[in-house]
Each structure stands twice: as structure tokens, then as C-alpha cells.
Image (cartoon, rainbow, N blue to C red; front, side, top):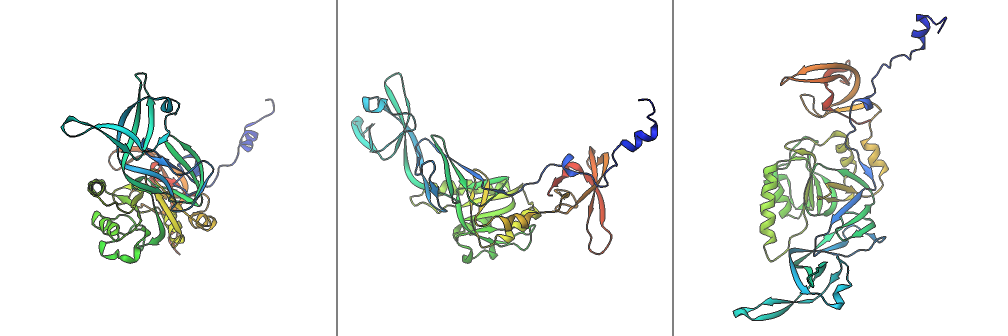
Amino acid sequence: MAGLGPVSLLTSMPAPASVHDPARFIPLANRPRPAPLLRFDLHLADRPLVTPGQRVELGQAIIERFREQEAVEVPTTAALVGLPPGTVLDDVPISQSGRLGRRSQQGTYRTRVCEHGRDGITRLAAGSGQTVVHSPAAGIVTAVLPGRIDIRADGLGIAASVGWGRPAAGRIVVAAASPDAEVPASRIDVSAAGAVLIVGARLDVEAISRARAIGVAAVVSGGVASRDLRQLDSSEARQQASLHGTAPFGLLAVAGYGRVPIPTHLWDLLVAAEGRPAGIHPTARSLVIGGDVEPLIAAAARPAGTVRITCGDARDREGRLVGLAGPRRWSGGIYAPGGFVEMPAGDDEPERICVPLSTLERLG
């Protein structure tokens, strides 16, 4: 270390960056992902209609599902003992009690083997009230297991925070003027039948019921109220008890609960995708858009270093992280590290505000 003075130490250190790297402090925002994996749950009595490696098209039937399922027991025979759990059996005669204590034989239309008990009894899952689950996207079946079906979908996938309903598909129709707008029930008409409706920040239960009644396939919004989901659950239970089945309908809330605008980069993507075929899978909380993915990814792209404010007075605005403020006391008495975000303001000087780092997400 002889001959190494203070000046040489200073000159050997790297120069500080003029703009802080958001990747070191801020999590990545919800981004679209090409070729998403869709997972469909199989209940005990459900019957898969596809095989591994098979290609499925948009709207193709992939699962026979039963609204009512029950467990039944039959004596284990030589024909049954070799069947592994998950095997599908049709028209299995099951002994049931008849009137006045008499025994009667009745055949069930679908059963699946659950287990072969040591007591000489084979337990089956029987179903009634048949419905069909259709694929919300085209793709390749990657796995068919006793408990699920996996499909690698074509197109672009968008993850949501909340999902409700059944898989459904249609063309994308943008019904809102901006990502934070609300669409009243009066603006939903029969022209939206069979569509995946993009409705902005929120859709109340009256508008959802109207959309469902006129044949809208699915609704995509920024947020949804939990009380609206409870009312939808009650409505679905009443319809399931009816004799006639209903058309598939689903709902996705991209950003969560309440009145929340759709993130700006996803809004730009959805506007660019208007008219394209799309499908939703509420259980997986996914929206899949078909067609060429490159224009959609370009519509959602942002320059490197771009961040978005997710809450507060400047919610949903975009800018650059240009400095760190250290720990600060924010409204509500919360201490958290902050950062300076510089946002464009037209022809004027850029606006610079200080916000908590926890309210930022990285776009670029």
C-alpha cells in the first residue's frame, strides 16, 4: 500500500449514477407473459376429454363436469381390483334403497374409482347434472392427471388478482373510455353478446347481472367489490339448482378489490387487443389473448427505469425514480423509505414528488 495516497483512492472509486436503478428497490409490475400455462382442476367424478400432447382449439370441450357428486360403495370384484384410482367407469350398477325398504338396482352414468379398501369395498365417485368445460384458449395439452389438466396456451396471458365464475371466451370489446371509468348498466346492450367486456375501474352488481343476462361471455375490470361477489355466488347457486343450465360467464379483477383503475400499461395493451379472440380462466385468474403477441407487448412496453405509483394522490401516474429520500414519516404515522419520482408535465418543467418506495412498481 506504499505510495497510495488519498487522491488515488478517490479516483479509483466509480462515479455515482445520476439516476437510481429502480430494480434495486422496487418490485416488478404485473406484466403480460407469452404462452401461459393454464391449470384446470378435476373433481372426483369429472371426466377429461383430452389426452397429453393433444392440440385444443378455442372453445373446445375439455372436461365433462357434474354439478352434483356423491361417493358410492360397491363390492370389490376381480374386474375392479386391477383398476387404478382415477379410472373412469360408465353405467356401474349400484344397489340403493327403494320404497318400503325394498332394494333396487340403479345404474349411474359416470363414476371414477377413488380407492380399493382393505374391507373388500371399492369406493367410487358418481356424478349427475352434466355440464361441459370449454377451453378458453387454443394450445397444447401438457398433462392429464387425476386431479388436473394442464394446457400451454397460445397467445399472451395477463394475470389478475381476483377471479370468479367459469372459463369463457369471446372477442375483446372495450366499453370504458379510460382505465378509471365506470360503465353504467344502461350502456351495456345486446351488441356486447358473446364478448369479453373491458369495463374500467369497476362494474356494480346491477351492470354485471345485465351483462350476464344479455349473453356477455366475461367481464374484465380493475377491481370488484366483495359484496358483489357474494351476490353473484347466491345467484349462481340458484341457477345451479334449476333444471336448465346457463351459459358460461366469468369475471376478472386485474388490480384487486374495490374501485381500482386498470394499470395504464395493461390498459394500453387491452385497447390494442380490441376485436381479438380472448378467454378467461377465473380459477387460474388469467386472461389469454390470441393472435400475434409482439404488437401487444410493444403497446405495454415502457422506457427503462419507468415506475408507476399504485396508490395515494398521484395514483396511476408514471415517471422515473431519480433519487432516494431515506426513512420518512408519512400520513398515518408510518415510517418508510421514500424516493423522488420525476413525472413529465407537458411543455413545463418535469414535476418531482416524494412517495414511499412501497407504493411504486417497476414498468421498464
